[in-house]
Length: 190
Image 1 (cartoon, rainbow, N blue to C red):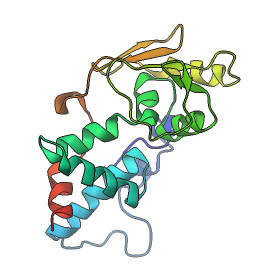
Image 2: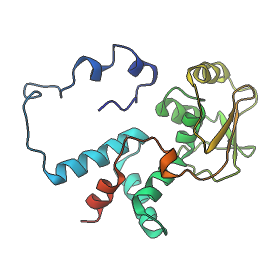
Image 3: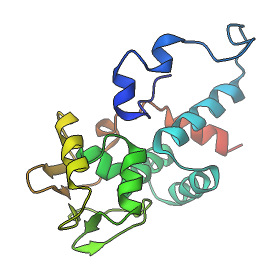
Image 4: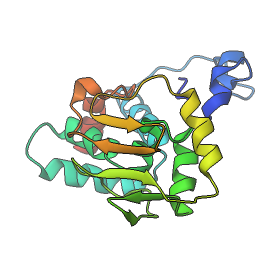
C-alpha cells in the first residue's frame, strides 16, 4: 500500500509502488492465504511505518491508550497524531514525517517559545509551534510549505510567519490515516 513515506518521490512515477504492485523477490507474485493474524499484523506494521516509530514505542502508546477512557483505537490514533513530528508535517513545515523528525531533532522548532528537540513530544490544545528565529533551515521549511494545499481542521497554520497552533484534539473523522485501528486493538488484546 502506498503510504507516502518518501515525501515528493511518492507523487511521481518513480514511486516503487507505482512501478510494481507486488512484493520484491522470486516469490513476490505468488498468492498466500491471508490469516486473521496476518491481516492484523500488517495493519499494525502499516500504522508503525506511517508514523515512523519503533515497536516498543508503539506498544507504549497502545498501553497508554488502553488506560484512557474512550475507544482504545481512536485514543491510539489521537496520541500518534499529537506527536510533534506529525504536527510539523501536518502543518506543512516538512515534506515528510522523516524530514519533520530531522528538523525537530536538530532544534529548528519551538513549542510555546521553548526549544523542543524531541520528535515524540506530545502537543496539547492551544500550543503554538514555531520555527526558531534565524534558523538555517528556513528555506527548506518554506519549500515544504509550497507543497501543502490545506491543513487539517484541528490545526491552524500561518505559512508567512512559519507558526502553527493546535486548536483542539483531533477527532477520528479528522484523521486521514489509512489504518483500521480496530484490527490493531484486536492484535494487542490477544
